[in-house]
Amino acid sequence: MTRGVTLLGYVVLVALAVVIEVAARRRGTATFGDVLGSALRWRPFRLVLVAAWLWLGWHLFVRVDWQ
Amino acid sequence: MEPMEADDHADPTAVARQATWSRPEGRRRRVLVVTAVLLAAAYGWWAVGLAPFSGAATVVVVGAGAGAVGIGVSARRTGRGAGAHAARFEQRHDGGDDEGRRVGGSEESPVGAGTAPTPAPGTAGARRWAGWVAAVALWQLAAYLQHPRDDHPTLSSLANSLLDSHSARAAAFVLWVLAAVELARR
Image (cartoon, rainbow over all chains, first blue to last red; front, side, top):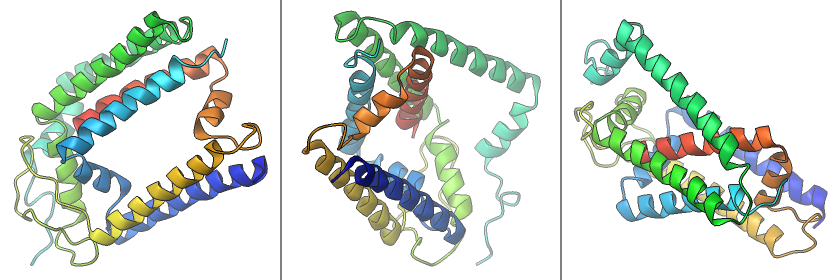
């Protein structure tokens, strides 16, 4: 798998998300926000997601020597 | 059943918020929001300039994230989170009977006080999104397990490439903090 193929995969996934979201809004079905909101009603998932988000911040803003 | 109209069954929270935004109280709120964002930007500029892998950077960054989560939780408990979100979902699913059919909850469920339950999304919609998340995770894992990293970039390595300047990193920090507030507010 080359760099181009890997990047193409990410682009396809982003495009897929846009298509699913637009289709959901047009049809009135569940958008990503709706699914996320529903999942967040479950406390364990909420705790895991918040912890993961804090970890992401630490990973992006503390663990990288960008200077 | 007649579709629910926002005017006929006016959601007190949404209507009040819309009216408040244009009043003096709304202007004051805008000033507060802008001030908060500017302060967050200044804090972010300082935070991302700290020495990497240091304890200070860890405390500053994670502390900001935890504070943002606390703000979001506080907003949710005072009814500014769950009520608004449920209102938007209610207005979009006003009696439709398709794969977006609500499972559980009531079409007449009150909103606005922060206690209204968010109707569960349709199963098909949830499955699509779960499948998408699984695809992203698998693609990321496939890239992570292969080397060299330049040929198999992960989301982290791509993000680091994008955030290769102080200003970009500070802006990303502010967005991360705002997203933490929103995540905790839902």
